[in-house]
Image (cartoon, rainbow, N blue to C red; front, side, top):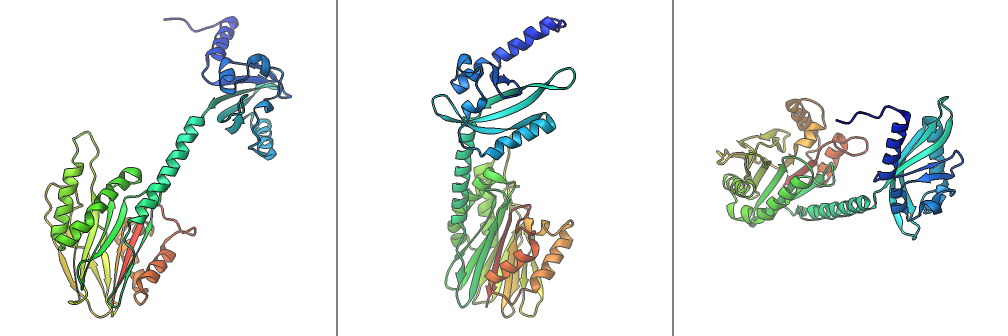
Length: 374
């Protein structure tokens, strides 16, 4: 094993090798900003040879993309902290713009007096291009995800509306509803485990199945069994890989018979606010979908008494109310009873106003559906 360099000469030789072979560009200036020395990576990234750069000011790389205040802040940071880190849009010798991630440090003598500045930077143009493409792709994916959400239904018998508020660019929440025949409507709200792109993709794949399953299966137990089968087939994984499951609540509304049939797959209980102000919880069902090979599914039936309001939501809403799930459900129930006379759209607006933060944001994905049954 080689010994560590101990003499000043050995340390200087090692420092010179680091300077020469570093894949990051390095240059040193005097206190006036005049370049004194550059390494080969500086030449490669900027296109300026050492002979062309030495004696020049780093302004030769200036692109004109930053205001004067940006550079002034750098000098303030160097004087105050002895260093600065940040990014530039600079220009190579051939005129091409590039993104440069930079660290500048003040070099001091033994008496702690500044004697020069050392800048180390790397070309992050490809990284920035990849980030821009990712942001563009995420924006497109979010628009697609929102575009497949069911549009409001409003007629003399029923009014259905929904709100989708992902905490990130993409989320696993989704809602959908369909008019099955002249008097029955199927409404589902589900929440895929996790966040981000993966849960969004799973959500979209499930969404693509819903119309066929809801309009053919109709009944809650059969629908959940169909979804569970699809999840097990599509996302069954080996022991080392990630598997996906989701909570869901499905309601079958018969406006002619004035009855709701439902099932909840590990989902927070929905509320039926009856005309007199009484509240029924929709809390009968089964474990989350995709978690077990076979589901034993319970279904519930609730008769409607006069004009009724049905409210479905994901767990991000109750999480916003504080600690303690059961207490938050009770808190939410008391809140929404006060909005029972509103139509579905205004009902959702009032829930948002009373549960979101001052800037209208939530820490988790929040999705809600309100259904007014006349």
